[in-house]
Image (cartoon, rainbow, N blue to C red; front, side, top):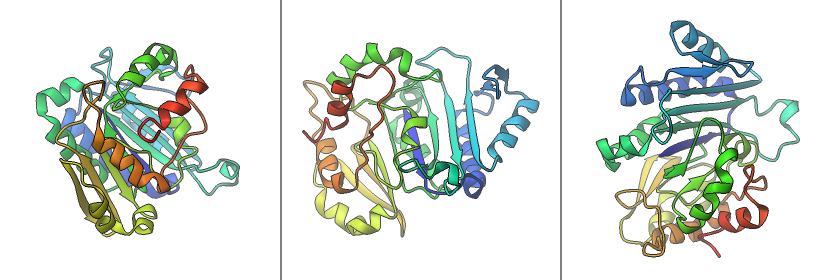
Length: 278
């Protein structure tokens, strides 16, 4: 399960909010679950008291803050926290199409099976609460702290068969997405300016009619759309009409990547990216 949020703010403006979300995540999975982080040379270090001091210092860097925390359990039972903070107004980033500060939390399917999909949704809402996001999403995903490039060629055929499973590289999407929406997913978090531009939660409720879909206002400028009681992978016997409906309704505000993950062939990636539209 991948829970991502995109924040159109300079990193130093959101460090405290992200730290609050990280603490919520740690409380949910148990504080000692995350055990390692890579240092500035890419070497893995133990996440002890000294390690946490290094992590907190990295999160306070003004221009660029890159933090990755994980446990030492092999996937698919891995937990992961990723933070890609940027001073998005700095001249160095002006050539990029839509840089944002981004944060991602991973919980394995075993955690969801133990605690239930409702608990995952509750966790996602709690993580979102302090974050000034423009968009976000939560759902089934292919993940791995070494990056997805090394396994992409193996999983692409399965992704085509199971469209409810996502695959993304946070460091690619966070340079392009701006304030647009990556949809559809089991949970779609929608903030301003997209939410205001489309007419708010009233517009969403008037357009989304698939059984099980709910629209909840989180506050005046943020909402979450939930596609049923649990995330679905899709497949020949599971056509995911709610996901297709959401993709169609939100297409005017949708983000479509121009940079594909490593080893994801162009002819497959851009078709897969529009799998609920074409």
